[in-house]
Structures are given as C-alpha cells and as structure tokens.
Length: 207
Image (cartoon, rainbow, N blue to C red; front, side, top):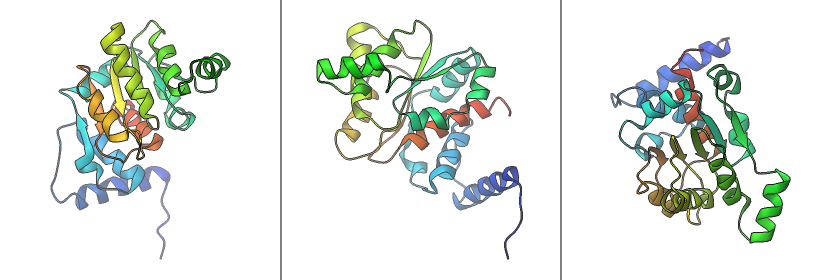
C-alpha cells in the first residue's frame, strides 16, 4: 500500500533511509549533508566512498555563498538544478555560458571545447566564483591551467564530471591545484551530482 506523503516528507523519509543504510557511517557536518544529498539524488551509495573534500572545503563554500559568490557551471543541466532563488537571496548568481554566441565562436576559432572557453569567461567575472563541473573534464583541465598560469583563485571547485575519457585524470589534477575542492573520484558524477552539492550547501542556511 502506497503511503501518501508531501514532497518534504518524502525527502525527510529518504534521508532517514540513507542514514540507516549507511550503517553508522558518518561525517562531520556539512560534509555529511553533502554526501547524503548526492546519494539521495542518485540512489548510489558509492558516493559515500567517492566524494573527497579538501581541508574545510564545504565550510569554505558555504561562507562564499553567504558572501554572494557567483557560480559558473559547465552545463545547462547543472545550472537548471541549482536552487537559484536561494542563491540569489544570498546575493549570488548562477551562470552557464555554454550557448553564448561569443563562446561558440571562440571555441570554433580556437579548436577547443566550449567548456574550456566557459571557464575562461567565468574567470573574468571579477568576483568570487564557485566553478561547478558536472560533465566536461576539459573544464577542469582549463581551470588547472588558469590557476597555475594566470593566477585564478576560485572560491571553490566542485569537480564531478562523469564518463570515461580524461575524467579520472582531470579530477586528480584539480586535487593538486592548491585550491578548495569537492571531487567525486573515479568515473562517476554528473550534472545532477554537481547541482546537489551546491544545493546541500545552500540548504544549510535554511529553506
């Protein structure tokens, strides 16, 4: 027999189930909320092992959001999944430049991916930025170059691209860049996971 529940009740019940099925495993907050939300989004408990955080990365991200940091994503899907009302209430704004005519033209002229150009454009915003990568390893590779060669200082990098080509390597690379990161090691990830990580940090400020 189906139980009739509100969306909020469904989410609360899901989080209770996740906590129970983690069999006592826990993390300090806010990391625990991020891990649970990624599992909730994907029904994949591998994120309990795959998600890695640089020192104090989650709190650094939350403070950046509280102070109005902007977000740059590599996909419209990640952009769409972020709670922009909550973000904007904190003074921030989300951007996805992937279909901008100047990005399309620059990528065509340079022979690189649009995701690469998106990172370059995001680096020029002139304000604290959290880069949220759920699809394109080339975005992480370009962020690494911008950090090492051009002095980019991201507030945080969420690096969770999914796939088989350069995915693992790009994540490992960003973990050596010397900036705060949240990364899903291995092949798994995706735009839904990227948005979930941001939303988990936004929701720590209350709904």
